[in-house]
Length: 321
Image (cartoon, rainbow, N blue to C red):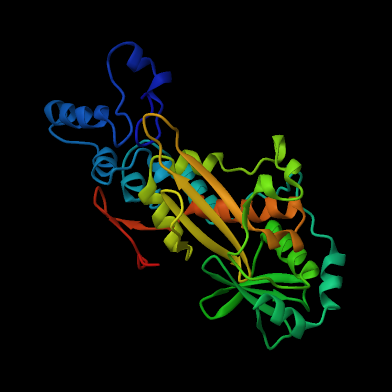
């Protein structure tokens, strides 16, 4: 393959055409192993980035490594500038693109907050299993983070250390308000699990509104261990479904089920999402699309890790379910 583990695409390089250089290939490829041997012979040394990728069985650092950009990139002379690496780190810390199901910028209508202010808080706490906050707001646990719904100031906040900080995530704000403004009952979990094609608005999830699972498949289709690591990090509960399957709770009473099938010589890898049918009581099809987008984005980001120069990955969190 023409793209090296570091991200350089040798397919568009004249040095390759002239026969002066060859591609390193992905970290799990035969090209990578051969390139390391050639480097030892020619330069009496090896590229720290390629060594690390081969050692840790990572195809592409920018896509597959939760430590990117690590010291191998920051302290090395190539391949990326400090400005590029800083941009990458900054964007990794952000939330999903603030776009709705039609790729338009999300605007949360102020009246959604007005509706929430008029709802009975005790009823909402019972229906959602959210927790009360002394300010009159509500707290819920969203994929490893505690989120405060600050009703008085019409905003979301997350707990950073011992302080609540504003959350700039229009999609999360919109989906949370839609849920709280429509929930009026609760249902047993796991009794009637269905796919998007089985929902009343199944026709919606076609064409441009198809659930965006392609990036997840590209990232984890041949990396089941990576999928498992991300699932555990976001507190997914392992299920006996598919080759790997996990239940996530973006809201305490609203589960999403992610299923991964490994590819083989006959079938390609596949990822699908299932729902409790009760989700239709809280969200329209566009709301379901948004909720899936939030969870899928988190899984793609995965956990951040630390890494030593040309060394082994060192998780900074417990790997348990």
